[in-house]
Image 1 (tube, helix red, strand yellow):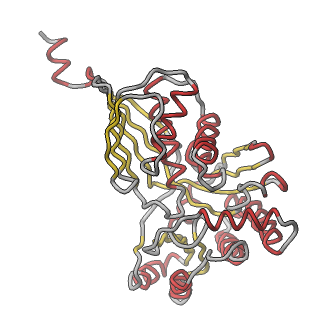
Image 2 (tube, rainbow, N blue to C red):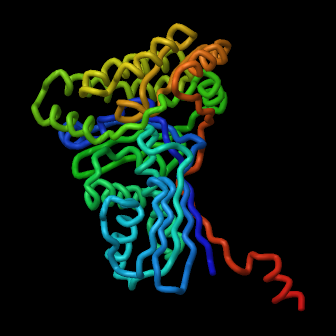
Length: 357
């Protein structure tokens, strides 16, 4: 029995987030700068021969269920990411029903603002690609993941997360009409990464959120024309250009300014992007060394990233620990989604039995 594993990194949205969401990206074009970190989504597929599909989705309320092998699994609200990927793969490649056990889990909670759902779709897809030998590169992987999540399953959101986790590293992304995406990997100097890691702190508010209502409100605002929300999104889009220059130059003060201004513009995009819990964390952080902060992802909860003087980082960390959330250590990661196989023949006992008789 062969085992297939895959993992894909979560991401921090540093600038431009929201401009990758249609209809804004179709009407005006979007720009986003993001970076992947050493928190991951994981998937394992184990081949079986009992004509069943056994799902163990620890990222989806610890959902466990076994189905008879079939060409389409029911999209019933449980483990829909696994089911959506399986259904699309079997349909697109005209496969007979498969028999396997699949297990998924995440380093961060769902609704944390780190792109967990999209990253999980990419991770699951990567496992199937590795298992079945499907001819999909990074662009095709990200595009298919986007179509499964946004179109097949009807989940609200943008396009940056799928491409961020497929490519990995620091990326400056362009989002054009007709769902066209251009990924520009950035060559960031090591000392800049080190300084950013020394200056940044990732704080979980203790509250996950659903981004759907915020994104729906953003879409509605965009459809209504040049209002305050759209003007704010133009500024957010520009911030991605500014952030690219700041990171490539290693200008941490400008990095902090862009984060601060981006958060102020973001709050104009929709209601419920901030709340008393987030504002308490922000005010606490600013009183203990933070230069700036912003919520990662759509807003409403999840993780907040703070920028501070490295010599005051422990002071900031101690102050935030007095609140209801927790601090999550992280470093930036390089590679994107990848998968690998574990064969029976990799077992030492197998080798001894068959090669050293």
